[in-house]
Length: 475
Image 1 (cartoon, rainbow, N blue to C red):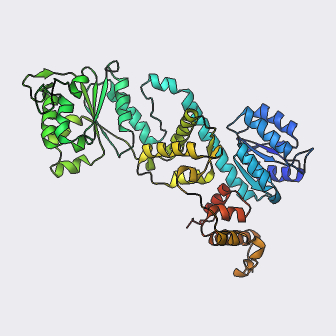
Image 2 (spheres, rainbow, N blue to C red):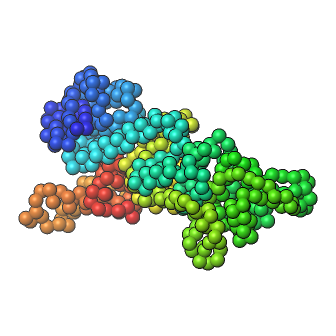
Image 3 (tube, rainbow, N blue to C red):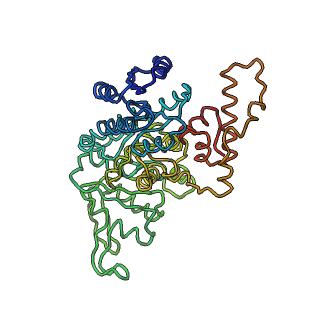
């Protein structure tokens, strides 16, 4: 079972949590810092709940913060959830700044805490898998899969296809939306194949004007056109003995398609302005984000060329269909850019993860990489928030907002009057009131989650989890 260390000087709270969580986790109990650190060193729990008011400073936070600091120094990736009173909001935020995963204000609601714990354990498991992937990075490089990560069934099929086609010297067509990693796959095919000791040359057929693309591909002779002052070799010749990667081949003009088809059939080219046949031995790997079959039907792409370049077709799934690969890649990028920029970022808040999972990712892996890079630069704490990713911009409180935010829960005594509780169980009544409070807080804050969470004295990640629990959506 997953290990959960509960650190609290209250015997009543320890019993409550052990009773409520014992079926899901292996519970370790500690009532002091020394006892907590001893159990922490022995069992290495992935998640810890930590009361800040520990003896001998039960009315302060010095011992709790000392315990937190020591744990994170030993195991920085541990998810520590700080438990504090409503009046201890400042110390709870200080704990988050030190690296705590989240904070939760007492009194404890087991249903709410279970949601937070579930997220914490899930993230811990994902990060452990990421560490395993990172530790095997050198082996991945040797196998020719450098830069490609994925655990979903679709990506496993892609890996299997790469292994099969890499050592067979036939043209390969890679299909997929922009940003799915087509060039990375092309290089993986090259690195695993018999041509790996020679060059892989890439050219984007959609980024070069038609008038220049022929010269870029096949080269030109001196005097072939204005400005051609010397003989120049094309990309095809530079790829001799290696691999030529033709990105966005679906954008290639019809005339060039004919010349490329001749090369694929005869393995010879002529430079622009030349008459000499030049034999070139290179493997063609092409890629496109357009619907090739539709282009063939519309007369934009030659069917005979398609059959030449598409002997083997590999289709890359869009990121939105890759499930937990989104979190896996996000954490890999987080660690990579954190090391590159010297930033101490450790993970994502619950709200950030919610955005990562629900966003459509039109730019696919490339967009995810750019957003994580932005987040590493913008993050003010070790935990990346949704606003750091650019999903939710921070808003300054206006005077009217502050007045609205000044309302307290006690100023809304009419909540209970909105319901008829006759014959209702306590659990159902509490659910109704909790849902109403969440909605009212969002209305008073005009959709500002940060202010709504502060009004209800919970952290923003916890507020997002409560919205999800009650099936509410941020307007």
